[in-house]
Structures are given as structure tokens and as C-alpha cells.
Length: 297
Ligand SMILES: Nc1nc2c(ncn2[C@@H]2O[C@H](COP(=O)(O)OP(=O)(O)OP(=O)(O)O)[C@@H](O)[C@H]2O)c(=O)[nH]1
Image 1 (cartoon, rainbow, N blue to C red):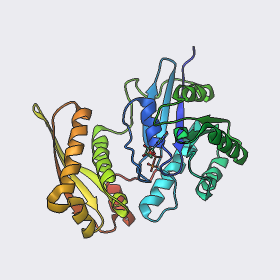
Image 2: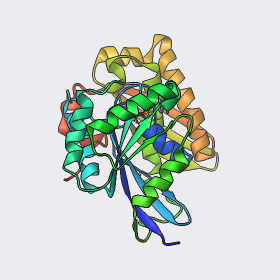
Image 3: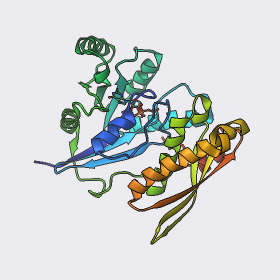
Image 4: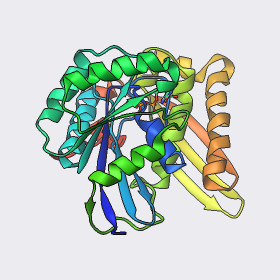
């Protein structure tokens, strides 16, 4: 059988399940996931290489109405992924009604000449009959090349999805070595895991105001010593994040430490510091410093 390869942009509104899907397809955590919208802030490649195919999935930030410079950068990066992909895969949360956010994304996709798939996610949450009704509605709003119902969380229909994607890929060589699973290095994944632990423990504006930067890393025979900065926008957010007698930051630290030990396969000692950087989401220099680069179109 001939070898095929290509880039598949996974796009969708915040919370549709993009990161969950990519992690499920790869069988490991490439991108953090949370119930908070706009969890993903970078385009992250998840690379799956099988005997006959290399799938390069691009997990993109959820497209939304931006309120900050950060939000504008996130949207822009999703559009760059659309423009560069060999296949666009729009993922939707079937439990959410069709709305202006979807229309906005479809407008973007209309300009693209590559195949466009609709991935209908979270089918585990609705009765089959209702899933069918909603599929028909979606069929009427856009000429998708394929519509694939699935559950990223319950890992339903994922093999079917891979074989459909393969049928649209062109013959070609592998872009990346077989063992490579992501374009982001280990320190990126470490910072993201810490941020995920914060997201799960905070509400409203706090999760959106947090960035994590690895300040120092020392690897030794005994394990890994990490110092990380957790950045927030206001002193009141810093107080929330530290918690009563440091209880919140301690809980974040312990939970992150546990997962990092698994990721690195060695003992991990994590130190966390909370710092206020006023209004960082609107400051270009800070966005760059914290790793949120705007991609070139
Ligand atoms: N029931 C159910 N929940 C799902 C499914 N897929 C994802 N979720 C949940 O939906 C939430 C959002 O998932 P993510 O994968 O973080 O979504 P995302 O599209 O990457 O989100 P952003 O990064 O905000 O753009 C999480 O709480 C997931 O557990 C699914 O198939 N079924």
C-alpha cells in the first residue's frame, strides 16, 4: 500500500473537544483539556505515524469573539492553520445549538479549497434519534465532504475517522520522524500541565488570566527540579491563586507534580511562584515572552 501524509487542521469553537480528540487519536496527552473555554492557546501539532500514513493534526485555539490582544492572536493562529492544511476538520459539540460562532467559522472555511470534514463530537450525550436530526441540519448549512459522528471522550468511531482522513490525503513521504509525537518540547508540555491544574481549580476570569513560564530546570540523578512562574493580571487574582494559607497553590503544585512525574518518568520537585503582570493579555511584549507568538499568514 502506498504511504500517505498530510496536515489536518482541527478547528472549532471553544470547548468543542479539539484537544480531547487529538489526545485520543494519539493515545497520549499532547494538549491539555479542560471544561473552560479557550484552554488551548497555541497551535499544537499532534503527529500520528502508522505503517501506511503520517497524520499531522494541528490543534488550534477555539475561534471566539476576541476581547484582548491574546484572543486576537489565538484566532489568527487558527486561521493560519486553516490556510496551510491539506484537510480542514471542523469539530462541533452536538449538544450546542448552531449559532453565529459556527457561521463565522464556516465563512472562513468557504475560502479554502481543500477538503472539509465535519466532525460531530459528543454524540455520547444525546439519544441517537436526536443526533440524526442534528446531523441533517448541519448537512444543510455547508457542503461538507464528509460528516463523521464521534465521541472523542468515549473514543467512539475514531478508527472510522482515521480511515476517512486517509482517503483524502495525498501520497507522500513522512514529514517527521516516526517517534515524534508533537512539535512542542518537553518544557512546553510541563508549563501546560501546570496551567491545566490551575484551570481546573479557578473560576470566571482567573483561568483566562493565567500564564505559566518555566524559569529554571535542573535534571540530576535524583530527578528533576523545576521552578515555574504562574502569572496573573491582578493582585486579587494572586490572592485567589495562593489561597487560604497557601492551600490553592499547594494543591496545584501537588497535582502537577504527580502528573509531571508520570510524564518524565522520574521524581519531580516543583516550586511555584505567583507574579502579577498587569494587563499582560493586551501587551505584545508579554505575549511573546510567555510564548504566545502570532504566526505569519
Ligand atoms: N461527553 C463528552 N465530553 C467531551 C467529549 N469531547 C470532549 N469533551 C469535554 O469537553 C470539554 C472541552 O474539551 P477540550 O478538548 O478541552 O475542548 P477544546 O475544543 O480543545 O477547547 P478549547 O481549548 O477551549 O478551544 C472537556 O471537559 C472534555 O472532557 C465527548 O466526546 N463527550
